[in-house]
Amino acid sequence: MTMKWTGGHSSPVLCLNASKDGLVASGAEGGDLMAWGEDGTPLGGTRFQGSDDVSSVVFSHSCPTKLYASHGETISILDVRSLKGCLDHFHVNEEEINCLSLNETENLLASADDSGAIKILDLENKKVSRSLKRHSNICSSVAFRPQRPQSLVSCGLDMQVMLWNLQKARPLWITNLQEDDIEEMEGPHSPGQLLNPALAHSVSVASCGNIFSCGAEDGKVRVFRVTGVKCEQELGFKGHSLGVSHVSFLPESYFLLTGGNDGKIMVWDVNSEIEKKQKSPTKHTHRKKANRATYKQRSNTNASGTEEEENGKISPKLNIEHGEKVNWLLSTKIKGHQNILVADQTSCISVYPLNEFQIQ
Image (cartoon, rainbow, N blue to C red; front, side, top):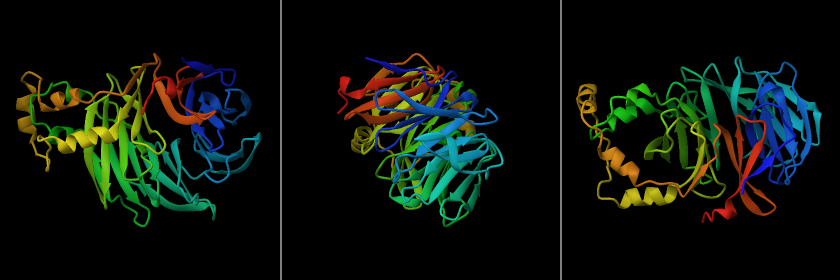
């Protein structure tokens, strides 16, 4: 049964985060920021000056009342017990911030913006320690890897996914999602595929730190494994009929939440699917390179190829018809039970209790 948290916002909710003590923060269009109790009661809120959208909120790991929020080009640090005033604020990005990520040791905060840049803010010295500039379009999402406080992944509307180590100013590894799709083709494909570009919207890293996922505009969900300084794509499947707007691993698990512009929310057992692929006799040890001429020839034939057949074997463990375009997904425990919180195009937060769906 779906619950709705209401009374906090009057415009679409864009982002969510939860503290280790169960507090929830939400950011919305027009500069609104709200804090919520476990029962969905609004505890307090503020509206930032300038009415820039609150695009990302992140709780401190060590201090559950400290909150980092991005609005426009600014990062504000607040105490959720008194949201009317800021503890500190920083203006280090040149364009609008899309995503924040805090590393586990809590000394670095990454902020990805519309220019494609990722600023790394040294919180102890209150200054930018790195400026990562490799995305050629909007950098939509960034995430530090758990257990590796100097390593992060990013994605953007340039269709690129990158792995970074902050000891270097350049990425260790880059993949272009659209080019990889062409290279991996082994069967006939629809000529419409290139008309739906793989603009990358969201990344999430599993708690192990070595598995991460990316959701893109082409409706595909991709799962990568980090091996040293490189990554390999373990899975790539059509998860949604429209763009995948947000992906999020459940805490301490390999269950992956995905939300789409098609109004659907799904849960995937990534570990189980990787194991199936590794046991499959059709597993590819090396990617086959197909040139563009070959791709053009294949795309003019009927679409029933290998990738579609393999994708058909991957099905979600849970499929929720949410009905609204998903802006953000969050899995958190409320009163001891795991729940999915959903921000969408409405001013409400939807809550789905996972125990009712028996996801094991």
